[in-house]
Image (cartoon, rainbow, N blue to C red):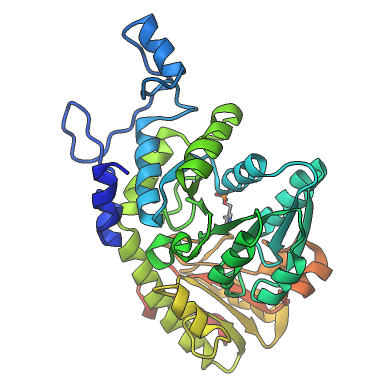
Length: 396
Ligand SMILES: *Cc1c(COP(=O)(O)O)cnc(C)c1O
């Protein structure tokens, strides 16, 4: 570990988000520069040869690495307590990169049934066809994960809390299961971000991100990242990136770098508003169950408090009167945006059964517990009184 890395590892989350791996060019700019260049030049043929032979550590080509992208990778790695990071074109590209780097024909994956819908689609449609077997288990049922393990299990894949039902996966217990054999625990840390949860400290081998969500925080760019130790990510995922090329653009990396500067403040503010809204919903006559790990009524509240330093922005709730009432609520919103995206400064509302979870079909929805009356909020950063007033009108 270099001196710079050792120093930033001791900083608090806000300081890391603002100061870790601050790069400066010869012009001494204070805010990081965007290196919009596809390649880098050499002083001589010998230097080019040394760079390609990895005898000299230099930038070569922006599919391999780029100073702005590298700054984002290093800063996010510092936040996650990881040795290495590789930025990707999207969150899905991060998950695909992990699958293609670490899985081969004949391997087996155990995945949470509550994973993001596109992740399940990716596994079923584009990973399984290479002869990789996938088993799905209920995220919170640690015994089910243990039962699903096979001698050829190579990867365990989860999110915690899950979307939209906020189920908590016992990360340390899954790490033990993975490490009892030659398997890797991969955690998609999209919903908590390292500001609220650091899976690597709990034993996870790899963290993946959709930077599109809270890392950006303002709904501007698509991106992702893979974080982990120097061998798994710095060497193996990086080698995959050089060959396969689902890389992040320097402009997007710059936007995400700026996003990291306010990450901790934003996550605290999201969580504070989300808790107030969850408590208000829980007391409303039209609302059935409310799913938010910050509520003491959440069945895994204690585990969530152990794993997370805050409860995040995602609140789901059931309307007692079903889909019609859910649509009426959504349609009555004047402030809250109707969109499936999440992790934005703007509060968003969606009906999972007919949008994000539509394509998995009614049976899988029933298994996952996604009812027709379920509504998901990604609570933004507006004044909470205005958000409650906006929702109140539609609840009748
Ligand atoms: C959005 C999301 C992804 C996919 O990220 P993209 O940047 O949209 O490709 C993956 N995992 C989770 C949990 C997400 O919410």
